Image 1 (cartoon, rainbow over the protein chains, first blue to last red):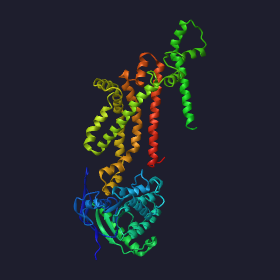
Image 2 (cartoon, rainbow over the protein chains, first blue to last red):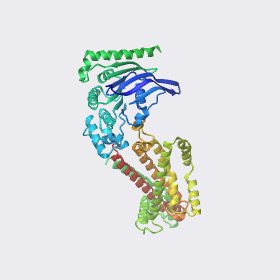
Image 3 (cartoon, rainbow over the protein chains, first blue to last red):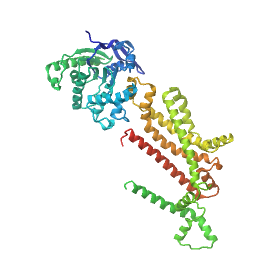
Image 4 (tube, rainbow over the protein chains, first blue to last red):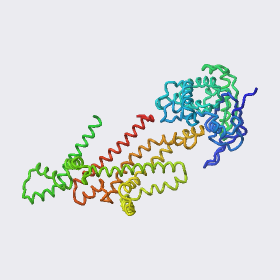
Length: 263
Length: 288
């Protein structure tokens, strides 16, 4: 039995036309993501990792190559509500309470009131925000707001979760905590997760597959399959296996950077 | 107390200045009157009291204005032609109708401008140009013109109010409806939300604070519009007419009384919009 392919990119390219000329955001990206994988995209700014995620989400359109989500075009997948997207900032609507923010996609997608209530309860439990239903976003810390935005992305039945540096603005301790929470959540929900980051420990700790990217033009320089066990306590980060993967990621990033310095 | 004390201090200072100014400005006429009556060497306090009690003073004293307001509102039947309460009501009804029209027009225009690039480029210059025309020039043409086709009374005045009050609403609402951030809009796209949902669940609530801010400006200038429109139709009544007839007849006390009623009316209207704003803000969780 083969695992179904969730994302497949073949020779994918995306060029932005700007006033200063063309910017090649993505060049010849080839990648297959299978169901249930946790894939991290890592690289310096400008390497196209966020652009790639946005292309999967049909928020940007590729200019060459082919991209399929669950065998559909990105637009079809978006219209089929195939994915939940977590942005860099929580992007909660400030005039809605936490539960109403989680309800937003459910209202748009036409879930019944009873089903909305059930899903709000379930997803807020999943991100440990029970008891904060009636709070407004500004009454919560940054980490809690980002958890609420994850709950919002989980509220409907998308099997694919796209996360664009969701913990980038948070401090290290909160980040460690949310990372281990995210792993548990991934294990429980069996979702496929694409996760953009520029932290090497975060990428290695979370992923089953790490995609190393480099800028100018944005491209994939290495794809690393992680052999770490599925059960990952935070101190796994001191084991030799972990450090070996981290070293390979660092090498990949350095290779990309030396290219930049020649230019 | 921290808020009341500074306000009271300023109020006392204004009253003192006002009474002093009344003595100074009314003195020449009082001297003439006293000369005719062969009164000489009037003690200063008595002279001051005389200047504060003239029939048609250059500057009426505050207590004269207050007593005129009292007599012309509480002291008269509401239906009396001289009742300030009646005239205030006439002005208020035109103000409110014009304000409702203006706000509605402003919102509709802003929605069209935000959702359609062509509307933005074609309408916005005209909207701005409309406000560069002096309202004193437009009002008589509209009131007299509409009167010629048989439309008199409330509606022509309300149209002038609308003409003034739609502008801050358009400008504010265009800004408000465009205030959602890119990621808030991207989020809607990931849900494949239709334009209707994007409007009601994102743009409209995001614009509400701007709506109230512009409505506060709108209702105040709505009142000005109604008063200016009334100057062109003396038969229709209203605070504007009281100002006009007062100035024809040198009834300065009547002018000041009408002015104070108009100012008080504006303050109350702005306060009501402010209260509505607070109520809505509390419901949408705006940080106090």
